[in-house]
Image (tube, rainbow, N blue to C red; front, side):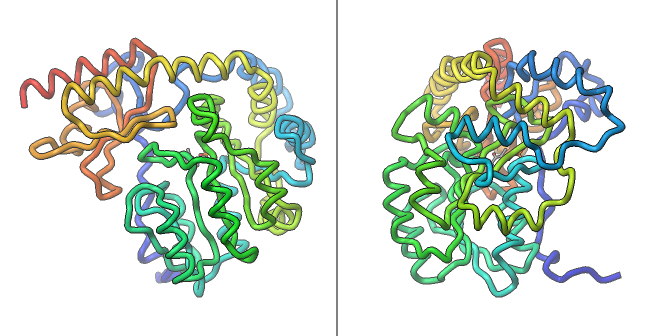
Length: 367
Ligand SMILES: *Cc1c(COP(=O)(O)O)cnc(C)c1O
């Protein structure tokens, strides 16, 4: 059988390895496995969100509310926008997919940073669009502007802060850049880690309402998978001008968010204490990772997220390091698939982090 030739150049997305694999493959007890690979919240979900999930279990036979009235009202209040400027996706991944399908085709170009979230390329290529990357690994808006003028892309992706490197554009420079982009170019601002970035430095805070009001061609995407601790529930959102939201809504499959997910997201958004605890843990623990890197001589970019990326140098090899740690029940992210000899570690609880330092130290000593 032949398939859509657009798929030929797509490499399957490499997700963070699941805990179950370490259990199955190496017989490690489940409770001993530590997963610092997918930027999940190490404190777990809000206990109140877990209660909300349990409560709606009895409605499992009913389709969810496809209007998503309650979650949209909550998000609208949270961001001080009207609910017709919101769209909800099964993770913000799905919003990104809607954007690509609404705007791009095989004649389009899609511009992004050299090293950024892998799903942008996968979705762009799925419609046969051409991917253009800046030459710097990290976001450099001067390079973005030059590439924008040279290639006239249909879509620009800005990941603020950027996964998997951790750097973060200032909100001011982002606004200055957007002023120079034509209103027919869709700019997707991926704010998956904004909760962490703005807690660390208010200059990094992006206001979706201000973005939307200033730029009719910009969509801001956010997610409940990271700081809100609901990665397993798959809820994300987009905030944009009504016209963008209407176009994307044509592509949204009915009932794309399950009833437990809707209930959990509403409660998680209200539980500001849990969010605060999560952000504080991150701010407290991040310096330990920076110190460890300095001690060992690893280069890293100061991170505005809940992960840190260590660049390794020969003879250290990221694939070997990740495999060694995996066998010891410590799951981290090997960035070899991004073409980098680097590892990305999610900031865990203090106990989890100490375990990581101890295991990695043992490895480094025997090297
Ligand atoms: C995790 C992540 C997402 C989306 O995750 P969902 O679980 O689909 O909401 C989007 N962008 C970046 C950069 C991410 O790291």
